Structures are given as structure tokens and as C-alpha cells.
Image (cartoon, rainbow, N blue to C red; front, side, top):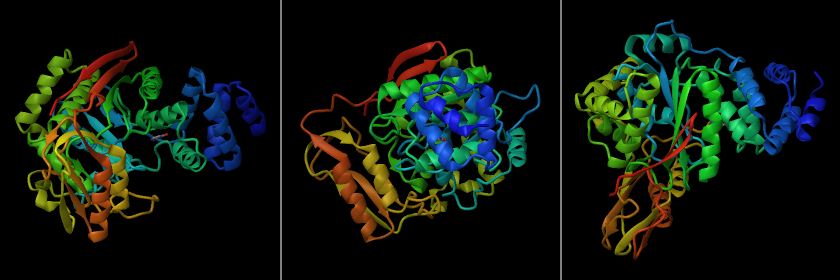
Length: 448
Ligand code: URA
């Protein structure tokens, strides 16, 4: 294989055949193509893109670089949800047991916090004893036994993506829609799914803040999923402010369990139900989205979802009492209340500023080897559109020490804006629904 000739062809706007992508990915994973050549090729793709056939071939090659979950014919439908990442986004912790309690298998493979966004694995690991490092065989057995598992990516899932992702991170080639789509879908398709629901975040706290880029990513991933026989639907949801009130690992875990007990904040419940209904619909167990919502509601109010969550936690080595007793979770040593400096309307709670502050306070990673402090973060009760009085508490900061408290206060001063009138540009919680048939505007919202 003449790698420079392939790089040259991509650089000049040409295309590689499926066989060429297959050979290239295989050789790169085996260490036979050096990083500098792959980096040049990735940069060429960044600028010239991939056509649909190339994207399918690259995704397939990355998928085939490793192993995956396989289930017996006739097994219940398997469905997962993937979020492009946000701040306060603890939906997975609520959704996995909730959907499993409706009779669907949920083999959920999640990631750690990335940049200013949080990760499901870090939230789960706030639960003392909870194991996220499972083998694929153990994960499959748990799904077969209790219908749900929540684990981290194993070394044998799409190893070519692991190597490529690290290279992209070091060469400024992450923000390419075809490369993001191939990377995410190669890992998701390894879960042996029959359906996948994508939560594409938009707004200041999202990786791709603009609507058009979010829609393009949704369409690209849907095409890949459907090509592999995995029914794929995407919802575009708001990340111009944090989701729910809690931001920070243990605080979010606590809020997710409150949600499973029927005490979740309205915006978190709205996004969870919207995504959950799509999961039940792609699995084919609900006749329509209305029926799906009724099933989710029953699973929540009957306590079946919370019971399933306790089973998952116990199966993975954690203390299941945590679902009912937040005292089991780690807590920060210091807290402070943040009052409003003025009377007026909350016009903004900037999710990105909050996410960056959590990292600075020790609740996220600057490098993949950093240890995180699960107790730090924020409880932010103020939402855009709320009317507040001067001195009214808007948030609480949870930190390890005085320096952390100062970082938290400073972040809230920047993130939370008060004005004379309610904001006009707050994004709807769920703005668009994308399927293989096209894009629908949804405009679902909950007003404070
Ligand atoms: N997450 C992934 O897994 N891959 C990307 O390329 C971007 C986000």
C-alpha cells in the first residue's frame, strides 16, 4: 500500500475505495502506518470530507478492528442512547434503568468527561464500589440477566478508533463531522444494537454549538446506523444552559436518583422522556410516542425504574442504597450560597463557563490521567426566564477548599446574567427530531 499516494488523492479531493480504507485502518491499527502519515490523511479528510461510501467503509473498518457484543437471535431489542455531551447532562443514569424497566435491553457503553463536558462513567464512579471496567462477556451476561449494563469502552471495542481519536486530538482534527460520526458509530455499532437514539446538543455548552452542524452530524450518524440495520433517530436538545440543577459528578448522580424516585427537575424529566420515548419506539415495543411515554411514566411511578437501577448498581459492585440515600455519595468539604446581585430576570446561565469551572475545581480532567474530585460542582436553581430578587440565592458552590469556592463564585458571576427583561433567545429544550426521512421541528419546552 502506497500511503503517500492515498494521502495525495484525498488532499486533491479524490476518494479512496472501501478496500483502501480497510487496508489503511488495519495497517494503522497494527502500527504499520506511522502517525505522521495518518495525521496528514486526517487533515486531508478534515478539509475535503468523505462521501457516503467512504464514510461507511471507514466506519466498518474501525468497527472490524475490534470485537463487540453479540446476542442470540430472538433476544429482546437492544437500544442505547448517545449524547454529544453537555453540562449537567445526567440523562443516561435515569434513562438506562427506566428504559430497561420497560422490557428493552440497554447495553450502555459510556465515556468520561471530555473538555468542559461531563461523562457518565465519572458520574457512575462517584458511587462507592461501582465497577465500570467490565469485559464484554461480563457485560453480555449482565444484560441477559437484568436487561441493563453501564460500562466504559473496553480495549477490544474499535481499537483503531482509540488510536485515531488520540491522534485527532493531537492534530486539531476532532471537529470534522465525518470523522466524529465514524468514531462514535464504530463504537455504538459494536454494542450489537437494534436501535440507537442520539441526543445532539446545541448551544454554548455543546461541542458543535450551531444548529446546522448539529443537524449535519445527526443526518450523517443516522445514515450510518440505518445502513447497519440499527434504527437510528436523533433529537436536538438545548445546551445553552445546564440541564437540571446539579452540575458535577456526585451532585448529578444524586439528582439522577432523585429523578428515578419521581423527584427530578422538569427540564431533566422532559429530555429524559423525549429520548426514552424514542428508544421504546425504535425498539418496536410502543405503538407510538404517546404510548411510549405512558409506559415510561408507569415504570417511573411504579418504582420499577428505581428498582432496576438498584439491581444494576448491586450487580456492578456498588451499594444499591445510594438510590434512596444520597449520604452514601461523596460530598465536598466546603459549600457557599451564591446570591443574585440584582433584581430582574435571569437572561443566561452559560453552560460552558460552568463546565470549565468544574474542571478547574478538580471535578474534570485536564489530561486523561488526572484523578477527579467527585464531590465538587454546583447546584444552580436559577434558569433563564426566572424572575429573581436582589439577594435571592441562585446557586450553591461545592468545593474542596477556599480556592475552589473562589473559582466557583467567579464562574457564577460570569455565567449567570440578570437583565431587565426575560431572554428571547433561550433554545427550546427539544428543538428538532431527525430520522432517516428528514427533519421535523419539535419546539418542546418547559417554562420555569
Ligand atoms: N466522541 C467520540 O467518541 N468521537 C469523536 O470523534 C467525538 C466525540
